Image (cartoon, rainbow, N blue to C red; front, side, top):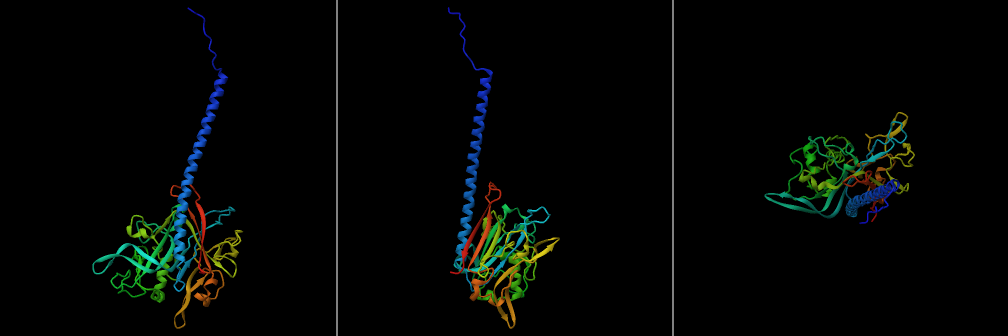
Length: 377
């Protein structure tokens, strides 16, 4: 029997330590590569979602403004609000988010999302070829319907772009959103809320809309704007999107949209208007918005919003309706279809700028896009 001891050479302690270190590095790199792969996959998914949102918005803008009725009314409110970013640490925000709104009329093949009662008993989907359309950032519902949460108090990534579509129709058997027995200039909050958020039609035609009593029209437009533009303040004003209310779903254009901006090409100065800070130097002496002094700094006057109501026309002897209220001198008498391409706020093209967010919050700051629609076709 061979009793010799076999000597098997093993690893030294140093060799073991080196091997463990190499293995650890390999695992570390593998983990990093795996995380990068997962992050890339998630980012790609987020970008795909954002691009799908972009396509939906731009396609709808193209359809709507491609059929714009220049003989109808156009109502725009430009709203800039400080977003809290203080670049020079002086206690005053230098950057502004936009909360613009636009209402207009367009031709098209429109239909309602739901069926509406057609007296005496039937209900049906309504169809029409002229609609009043509005784009705006939406309110969120609260326990009090009279006081919804405004877009400015919502996190940017949770804001919603709303698009309302009211088909113009005079079918006598349809219910009127407003009580016909109430004096024409009197509208309750509950009536306005239902009309703006739930109804999908206006019981009128374009010519009659343009001839609505100016006092009543001011109430309608102030409610659409959600701000006091003419004479009326409505806490419940603006479009409210309630995902739990089936009658509200039709106003949803896209979720995860902020900084909604509407600008027009201004031929006279060869630039887009309005701008908060035209040359981007942080000093607002060149702003198209109205400003006020806040200590040593000039800031946007958030209570004096610029707006445009096209066209400017005589509605009674010596009384005119419409106009433009912006930090720019433009003759009111030229706020008409003949001068459409030269009006600051309208012109040959509109530029829409907005920031889109993915639903999972992967791209934290979102992605900002610009889309131009041409109006001089």
